[in-house]
Length: 240
Image 1 (cartoon, rainbow, N blue to C red):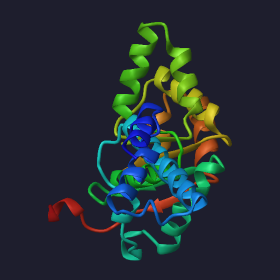
Image 2: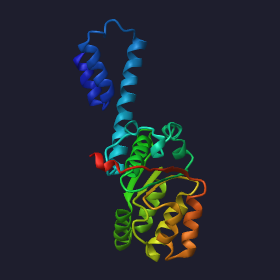
Image 3: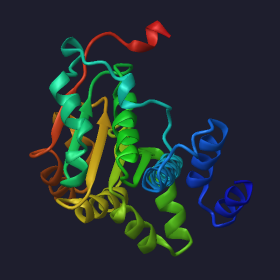
Image 4: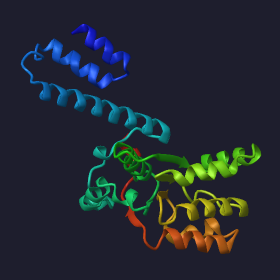
């Protein structure tokens, strides 16, 4: 029995190894048929690989907060309907490459909701990346200096879900607007994007107006077909 356990570990089948160990310790090996035992071993390995992949995706997303979709309570008075959460839980917006817009005053939970949606996307197996807008443009600047900007844009374009937080906090210059347009253009209709902002959508143009043509293109690709969460109410930070 111990030899089989060692061989499973040597073959890098940790899920099977842990399942085998559990069966040994519970003295259930002798009572299982070959088919039932094999089914449990395969299920154990599948579960372990899924958990490891989810862990890697969550780590790679670089979320600012540790929050899951289960931590978000439906509250229509705050702008979060149960039907919206139920729909989000299907990850359909990620699979269909759609945009989600989350707006609301400071402290109403925009970043938490965006992160929770991103975390759930990771659980569903989707590669996700979270950026505050300042951090996004810092990374773009470094990529441009190091002559790897095309690779950076290519990597972002392949990400299943891109989360852009704190959008509209400051006016973007012409180059930044063009960079953002390239990102949005690459993703439009193909990959999902979440944008969280304390600025109402009606005020987004002012953030992008240093390049009016690009601003029109960006807004046209985002706002018309996006799912929207318009959060409201008192700041949740008062309760912290």
